[in-house]
Image (spheres, rainbow, N blue to C red):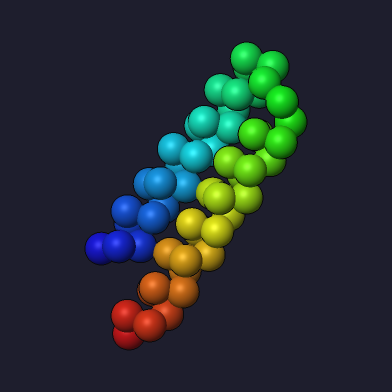
Length: 52
């Protein structure tokens, strides 16, 4: 279940990065949101491995 929540969080973070890109905010905010999204996806993947 937590893996699904983390995947949803990753989607929200990517959407936030895209919104910051549309608003022409600083590049570091976009990159930080994308890095957090990738970390969330990796955590979701690791949770699926331990859930067997």
